[in-house]
Image 1: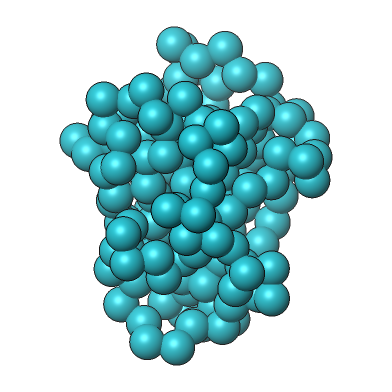
Image 2: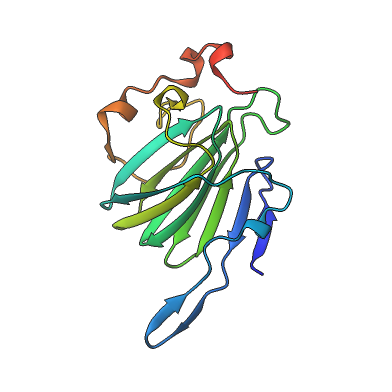
Length: 179
């Protein structure tokens, strides 16, 4: 059983420290088990793969109807999380985690926690979600919002046209934020 810990900064975010086994041929680790999250009753219905060049930034995204479980299959990323949930005791808390080849950790991201990542190397991110893709449940907040102040550690990331248009947190009406 891997070590599973709750974030000290954002309620309901969990990190899974994978048990990695390696030798001269390579390495192996289990990347997901249902019993790692016995308190969660989420059904995994879709798995996605995001392959990005070094210096790409994706996010910040959030959902009202989808949880994510992230793991890096190759390379390294800096994952960023921000608690948007208005009723959360950790509302407004931010956290970054460097994960991937040198730190094999999975991240469980609950509904209402904004998430994004910047690639520190070429990287492949696999994420499991509990709902099929639904564009009407795809929201964003500006990755460079000074009120959120994520320490990305990169000056000029490659950002998609969609993510470049994400509004600042102060521009999002309260009824468009999760509870």
